[in-house]
Image 1 (cartoon, rainbow, N blue to C red):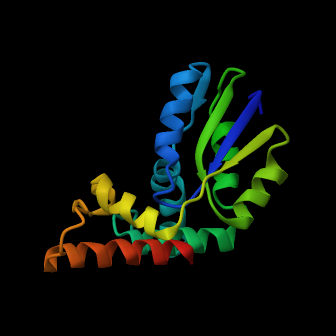
Image 2: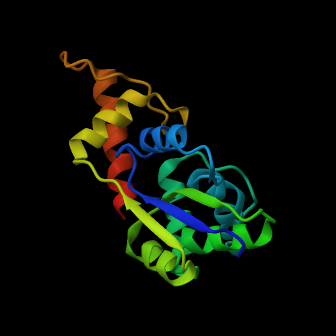
Length: 175
């Protein structure tokens, strides 16, 4: 591989990866941000697993289904996203550069980074689950299908339903 170094960011939904990367890239314009986990999952992992399972290759927006497919991919390739990034860099001719990737998750993927990238650094971000939940509810990302802002006021039925969905996303992500 022709890259000089690569920084892998590790962290679950809502720990502040995007905010951290935004600030880092403001300071270091020489760093190249690779397509993120969501993009590579859509372009590589989901179609791979759909083909393997004999399913039609279609976009998958349901977070729980996405987690199921990525889990199945890790069974196929224990290094998971680390292997996807290695294959992606190998397939795409990049000039020698320093890269950032958002994000690898779990022990297997971090071990895969150590195995596949001799010049890697790993930045792990973490936050308590309650902070992650608040960030998830407040960010309004259409991907999460959650648009409710937490106001500290008594929750309506709609707010409670959105909170339940967010909690389900966080719980499923742990598997």
